[in-house]
Amino acid sequence: MAQIRIENVRKDFGAFNAVKSSSFTIEDGEFFMLLGPSGCGKTTTLRMMAGLELPTSGEIYIDGEEVGQKPASQRDIAFVFQMFALYPHMNVRKNISYPLQSQGMAKPAVKQKVAEIADILGISDILDRPVGGLSGGDRQRVALGRAIVRDPKAFLMDEPLGALDAEFREHMSEELRALHDRMGATTVYVTHDQLEAMQMGDKIVVMNHGVVEQFGIPQEIYDWPATKFVAQFIGSPPMNFLEFNGAVGANAEQVEFAEAKFAIPKHRDGAKGALTFGIRPEHIALDDSAPYRGVVLAVEYLGTTQIVTLDTPNGTIKARATSNDAVRIGQRTGLRFDPRTISIFGADGHVLKSAANERVVTHG
Image (cartoon, rainbow, N blue to C red; front, side):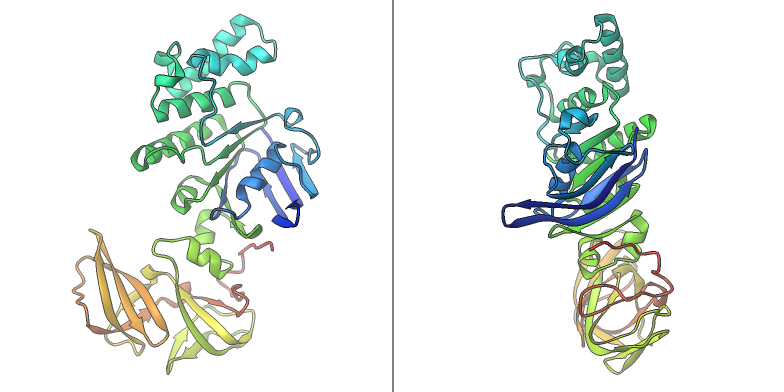
């Protein structure tokens, strides 16, 4: 398997800039997620790694070799598509064995290798069945088998579970992660589903409008988003934003707005003007003794928790309360924020550096 390194990669389609000078490194053996909304550049980035698109500028290294201008056939990678891309006139065995036969491998070795892969994927009992009659999950296993059978340096997957229904998609995501852990393969996986990315990935790159907004481990991205976009895109419900005009001084440990003072992590940066106070719903407590207050607009019961929507002097926010908390619509209550978890964003949408989030990594 191999490390993949992206350095200042840009992709233009005529006058349209699809990917803007992206840089990040995928370590050997990582399960790496490219996450973002439709049109953000994640699939274009994956296709450049694969050699299906050539970068306008920048460099791509696979296992230490610069391959940016080499075709896909010279990169030793396997690509798994969303729509399976199987050969309909072949059965399962022939679909999986085709890459090995194309390489001229001897028939006994091909048979043994196909049997090994089928056992790993749990499809030994369907090897002689036509692919047209298989379920979506089985067809995806066959597509994975065809990709992994030749032991490539890396697996590149473009929303491979996107065509499956929600329940089976969750099951297959668990199987795919378990398969990765058994094989120790370098895997790059494109998705627009933030829950899928958080559950499966060792590292995540979050992209928006062709820009890498942030990359890091899932917990860092969730706890300390680098931009307002990341804070909105990751989390359900997403991070709350309270807009205010004010100032945060260098080394500040509190911020003031709406006639209330709030403790915050000690900040390295200073800023003033249009600022944004960000906090996750689970870090807000309903507390009548707190000076900052809101009015309950809605309550959404979720079993073990409930999502409480409140109107505040600085906008609508959501708090995650336990299902045992007695909350009623129209109730006026105090709101207490966990000071260790607060992010402050500047007018440009980027987070101000603090002692808590100093590990946040961004590339623009």
